[in-house]
Length: 247
Image 1 (cartoon, rainbow, N blue to C red):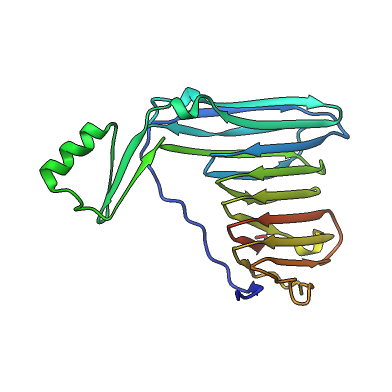
Image 2 (image 1 turned 180 degrees about the horizontal axis):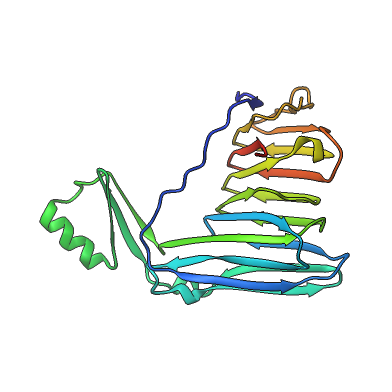
């Protein structure tokens, strides 16, 4: 049985990759009273904060197969009723070229085809590497700013969602990635964190309730009312949730 809350902060460090990439720069208009919903699948990292402009700004980079298939990544924005929805797509994902990657000690090598991989194996010996994987090679990172005090919901499948300097009601869910949030306790009205198979890490002074954390069948839920302000909800189904003191 895992511990409900570990009062430790572990830094999330993404490895740097020397990839050809395409810049992303998109703005989405929004009106007072509207809600924001964002859905992402393959972005490795999504950083979200608020600002004083009445628009949503999305910037970042996309590298798919070392820049050869970057145009497969698209962002779509739509409005229905009072909800503005932003989501990404990888067009024809199943039809994109596969890459074959091996890790040989400290060296990572990517091959464009099985033929290139087989040639390497013939020269260096089959099985003389630590790990091999295949699939579309993607490195997508986004930095998003939304207007302050707009109700926002973010859903991510594989990547980490990082929250900093966010003012407004917010709910974040990641399926396989982590959720990493830096908060001002005095400016937080309600706070909850939840995970099914991960851990919840925090260095906040707040005392969490939940007896202690509603832990059952690897599921952990904690909540608190540390101060006055918006409600924040963070969940990762299979990853960790990090609750940090804002700098």
